[in-house]
Image (tube, rainbow, N blue to C red; front, top):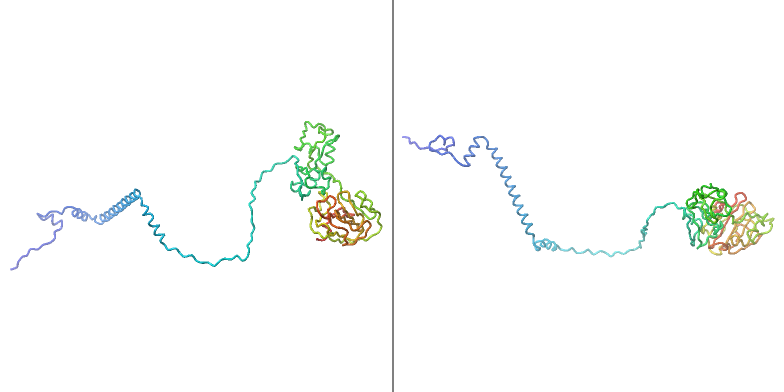
Length: 402
């Protein structure tokens, strides 16, 4: 006889609904079962995971905010702040490396550059004549360069002081410095504007219109007899005139007496003597200029060779002496040699003369000693070359290099 044993099985939700006396699951399980039956299990799982992460992030942010607020309200103590520093100071100090001593074997020199601070002021046209006091070492050329004028203008503005002779320039003199190149003219009784302008090779309006002269066309009257007070000084812009020659004239052996106007060193008639070959030598042992070069524009047709008192002075070529002695025009002791080939050479400011009138000389002969006689500010040789054809020429073009 077969015994019937009772069997058991797990009831599903559907079975539970059909079996009398069985209750339906309640709570979260029932809700989850219902979601699964609807096929939304995976979607609900993903949504739940996202919400959980969001809540976690918000929770972490809230906790960090509270921590920051507590830190601001309760700052760290000095001991807490000093603790890391104390830890750092505990780092072992490295021992210094002992280097070999350095010895400078050679003195190193360099250029020291000093800042030269200055203000560049804007310039404006100058119409007035200004005064300049000559200092030691000044030359006509140097003063002209300072004021951007020609050397001729310096002489033209100071005839009463320099008489067209640049060697008359001395320290302490007061010179008129014109605003432009030209001439400085003192008005004389009986003069007319037309005549004065013609003499200086300009138009009368140039004189009248120059602002610094203080003239007016409305009040000047007739140009032939203008209303200009006698003694008035006028700037003649662009004016020019011939220099008064203070240098020696050409002296030949056929007519040496022409030099009587120069002083007592003139000679008598000369009929014979050596003739040079035209190849010249340097005239002295000194070799550098004293400040005056060949400059016809400043009435200086020569070179000034500076040296020591007593330096030998040589004849540059063969010839005969046609002047030997003192010169009244500022040259001091002078020797002039006629070389018989169309050339003469002049040696001035000598401290000593070794040969007299009519003396024969040969190239390289010591004819005198370098000095500072006459209008001179220091020992030097004033040397000129005069040609029958070209007059007073630049010695640099005919002398060898010193």
